[in-house]
Image 1: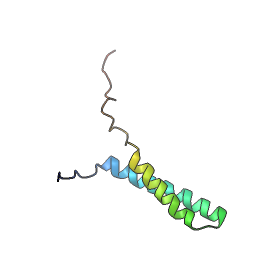
Image 2: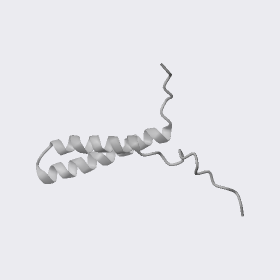
Image 3: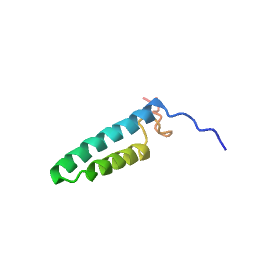
Image 4: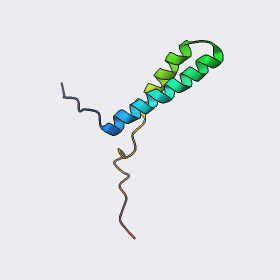
Length: 68
């Protein structure tokens, strides 16, 4: 079984931002509709979005050329 590498700080920030955005959206929708399970759904969607998206700077092909 291969060893897992630890999360990079950018990746960790990405997951935290996803959770916070999901929390805010879930809270707003649950207050708007009166159905509290939207909060859990918002957290799940935020976590999934944070896990799926690539953090800025992790793109291997985005190295800028120094041509002028």
